[in-house]
Image (cartoon, rainbow, N blue to C red; front, side, top):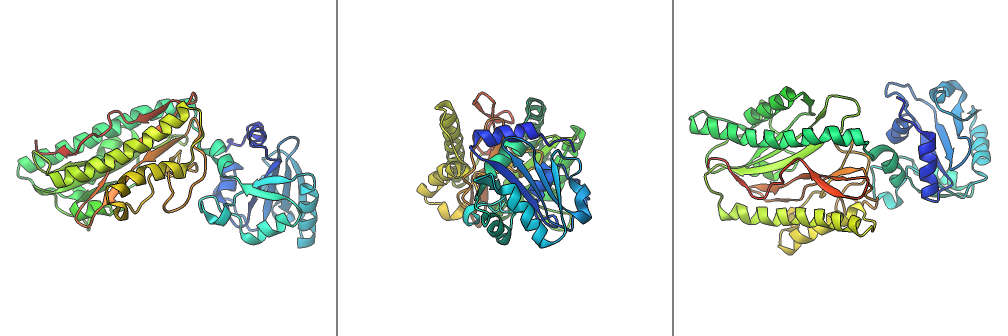
Length: 396
């Protein structure tokens, strides 16, 4: 609670030439609105509410008389309704002075993460003569921007994750050379323990995938489902963590290794393509900000995907290139995606996201993942210390 900032939102509305933002919810259908309006997750919401934020002046709360108290903590004039006729009258009166408003909507549902308002409600609002545009960039500005403190506290987390990845490979080497059998679950538990010892938290399950399991982007071992790790195996490790605090932001990286003292060419070839895709995407973001030009999430995906497609492996890159990172591992800002969705949201200063292209073959899959942060001055940096440049020969 305590996150809502009217002045901040109204400044964003002016920047984006919008007359207002209309936040709507029915029975917790719009968790974005609940989050922005500081409504507790345990609230019992059974009736429609609207919260109208004009670019200037006083907000309006349109609430059912039975549940009027849910928005009592927010500023604004309260209008209570009971019948559908009274609700319509309040909406009509509230919207009569505006022409263009934002709602949680995405044209043709291109970005389903934003599409939280049902078609009928959109039709009703439009019937009062207003144009509705997506609130996607407003959500990013309000909910995906990191504070200076969040970035500062994230840096050691990201660095420690890189160290833990190396420690996990060393753990595998030590056990293997000692003749002790090891499996994916063992390594996962080792990583979980290291994250806990560092004072951080994670959301299980951490990914440790061997051979064909590394070709499944969302595979994760558990106590009953795992593979042994043997000489000649390809190993992928994807790990994430954050500070143990409500406003802690995530770090999320992926490294790969081979169970030998040198890496066979078939793995090197695929890795080099994926690493080039990663770096091409990163360089595009960096160059756009240096040139003070806007860039949208789908363009980053196109840059990475173009490299992999040109190399002949486009059919094996069946995942978006990256995701927004906030206090949620998969955050509310722009995703690097022109595959699963067409994410047209802007990349904004003080936001973070992953770049994690991959080639997922039936016998093994290669992913290399970095986190990117755009500093307030527009400098684009990769967090997490060193960037992986080649597959780790684990037994070297």
